[in-house]
Amino acid sequence: MAKITLRQLLDHAAERDYGVPAFNINNMEQGLAIMQAAKACDAPVIIQASRGARAYAHDIMLSKMMEALAEIYPDIPLCVHQDHGNNEATCLTAIRHGFTSVMMDGSLLADGKTPASYDYNVEMTASVAEMAHAVGASVEGELGVLGSLESGHGEAEDGHGAEGALSHDQLLTDPEQAVDFVMQTKVDALAIACGTSHGAYKFSRRPDGDILAMHVIEAIHQKLPNTHLVMHGSSSVPQELQDIINSYGGEMPQTFGVPVEEIVRGIRHGVRKINIDTDCRMAMAAQFRKVAVSNRAEFDPRKFLKPAMDAMRDLCRERFEAFGCAGNASRIKVMPLDEMARRYATGLLDTQVAASRAA
Image (tube, rainbow, N blue to C red; front, side, top):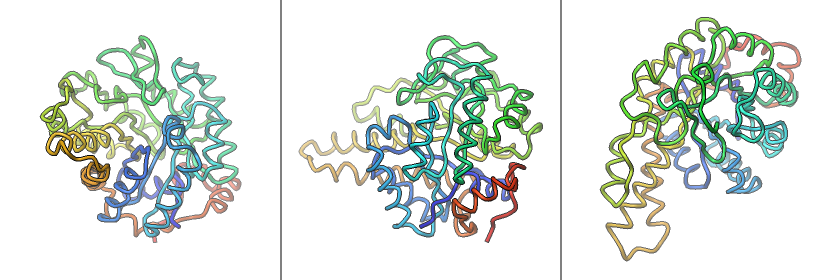
């Protein structure tokens, strides 16, 4: 089986200057679609599950499915990641169920709604990092609050997201503070706030520098050139998927996501993990609607799910290729968790970019 930690995978991405899309899943069909795309273009994979997904699919079912995917596709390095963990318990139970990486999102309190203080964020994230590193698992932290620079509000997804108005300072990660945060918490990856947000309705117009602050990523990368940066809320919300959904009975208002070319710009400045969920949901939902309208007599769920899987597979492959991830799976020699734990314990991973693991 080829389960890999986030740290090892992002170290490899940094060495070869590519980004890795991190796809959220809730069910078997999504997992298979991602792995089929990865197999087709030889890409390593990050599959992540939110607390909402874990509640929906149940931890045992989800963990067994991840093991099955790793067994079906043994040549594809697979990082299993907890998305937006809200406290120590969420992160530790994820590790116990086979997750090789966790995100401790201390930017919000444990309720997943209320912005937290900087000191709280540091304390919680450092605590999770210490525990996770002891068993070789990786940790992603978040500094700044995910939300829209255009509206000044956050957007909840699976029950996680800031409520109420957010200040400009909260919505943009401070580069100086980022340096202190990484040093104190020893995170393996840092999610930053630059104007992206959860869901489909990110921007009311094609984003420019006023509402998508890519310069913040560049400034942080200058100060932390060896830290792996993460862009959350980075679905591109393709126009063609909006059009399919609406042409088959949907009522999606016009909306704009994060352009792929802006993500590629971010990859040139240290972004190594790019979170994508909405695009996958839209790809599948578009096919559900198309089948339902085109064949009103159809009732076999497989006739809906198969074209939906194919659409999601194609979308995932496009992201693997656009982010430079394709062609790298076979170049990675996967390191077991106990070896990663030894390296954390002996200080070999303190530098944020480890020695090359390229085969």
